[in-house]
Length: 609
Image 1 (cartoon, rainbow, N blue to C red):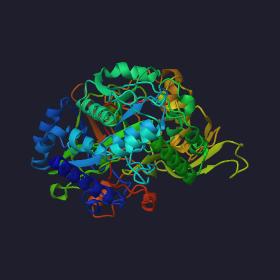
Image 2: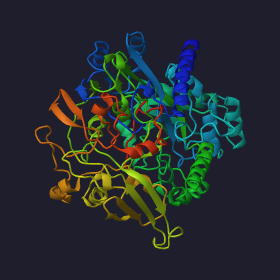
Image 3: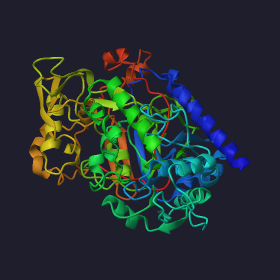
């Protein structure tokens, strides 16, 4: 126990160090030695993704200097090996997600708040972090991960972190639970005997151990309970369609900080909707904040609603969050510096590729080939048909969007240099109940075939995604009523409802070239099958595909005309770096820092609304 507590203390100290970095506009290493502003990049010549499928082989490849970065989170079993290896650093970050148990609140007596709160107080989350995770997790109460700025974690006057069986027993007694027949187990308030089945995935040791901790907490309260390892997909299917269960262990991870899902995931009207609201939760007070969360266009109002919904949710405990685990990523330090610990991806992410650079002692900052391991080969070069995160490691380098997220998860203007959001109250020309966004775009962006990237491309992209049958990028655009470009660098987008979240719906979408996809057509979006480098892809991002051998590697080469790129020759000649976009000098507000991460400790549930 003492050693695991020490390990968790060390891990948390490293996390704290990264979090402190995140509040300053600096990078992990020697950012002041590279030219340009925080938006300028890339610095490397080539980016290579080598297919290495096995965890141990990826670690060996890093040790043998065959790669510079492991392109996935590292199994904790390799932690000691990696920390003792020469020229290798291990980053320690919190997951933007958690492991949890869901409780069937539609089933008596689990529909009694006191029962769920009693279990929350009795469960020893500290022991889960110390014993089950060997110190590599932290307790969590809120359904919104603590790395999210919308999270209420740490703001409540109580926590469920440490076991408090005495308080749990008192809550049950006050609610009418009692051992009337003297068999050692409590009966429900109506006098009926009951027991609890805790189901956990038989394929996961973490799930099995957490399930046992939950059953032990219930037993300590006087509740007849047992934990049974079960086929994960069998009980997941029951949850999807609101079948019978008592308590089930699951995991969730998030790729951004939007929390509009709070309005759907636990909405009373979704208590019997397939794929939603696993705990079958119904609560009028919780629902009363839904409209403000979804339909306010003011950040402060949205934040207030998110906090109040969490306040109610944590008290009611339809689910009990067991931990937010700490994740590991590993990279070499002998050749490159400027690694970025990203809130969504950790070190193996877009920002590392964009900012990593050769050490000056090796002729840097420009040049070099930066090598990843990618656990799976790319399955397509069509980003619209792939669901593989490993494919998107590659394709995410090829396209741009109006806005992006910095390494702390903050919005950063990218193709857009400014925007306004208006409702009818702001501008009578906006129809009542509508939201209008007006974006002003930068004017030096081009496609790799030399065609200028304009607002026409962005408007075309949004309409294409919405109108192409079944296109996954159009699933959340059904309320978009218009997207058009009144001038080459002005974009107007309107939605038929008022909501803060519409901004992210359009601003994060990848922009595709109108002059290419007009010929492909709406009906052929899923048949488009690029074959680079045999057929050059028209893209806009910081890199483009230069070589590919199926099953072995994908090679990308930097885009010399990238709109935030640097004139390397001017820098080498002693100039000021030759910024291609002078506007970036005024855009340092979107600082990129260092922060946290995502991955799975158990199972990841992916769902698209």
